[in-house]
Image 1 (cartoon, rainbow, N blue to C red):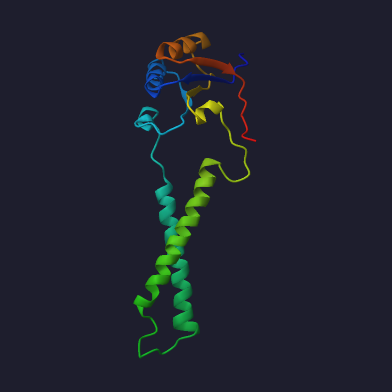
Image 2 (cartoon, rainbow, N blue to C red; image 1 turned 180 degrees about the vertical axis):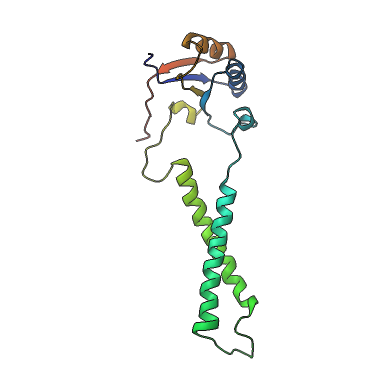
Length: 179
């Protein structure tokens, strides 16, 4: 059994990296992840990344905020402390709109922050996991998990170098800390 935990292909150009992804996918090599210093158009489709479900979480957080403040305002203004102001009814909907809107936005904002941190494991206090620090500056990195691959490591190295990789590293899976 190999001691290699991760194979990293380091590229200088995003187009060469996209060619490397194509070459690996033609040979049925599963790509663990791709690290880039900037967004690259079309990479999600190429890696078959599903659309985010954060919108559903935002909707649920907004509905929660709306129902919480509507319940509080309704209970307060209709049941607990009804006031006769200018002959208006106690349950006047235009009075509820500003509160409901603001609390919907508040719950959605805080809920999205919490959901994002939970989904991406980027909550505060956690050490950042970066395969290669140069991927945050000027390099493009393809990470391949060699477990269960039918191709030998030399063939993966050849595919990456033919695509234009400036460096191919067979390393232990160590995470680099920013500290």
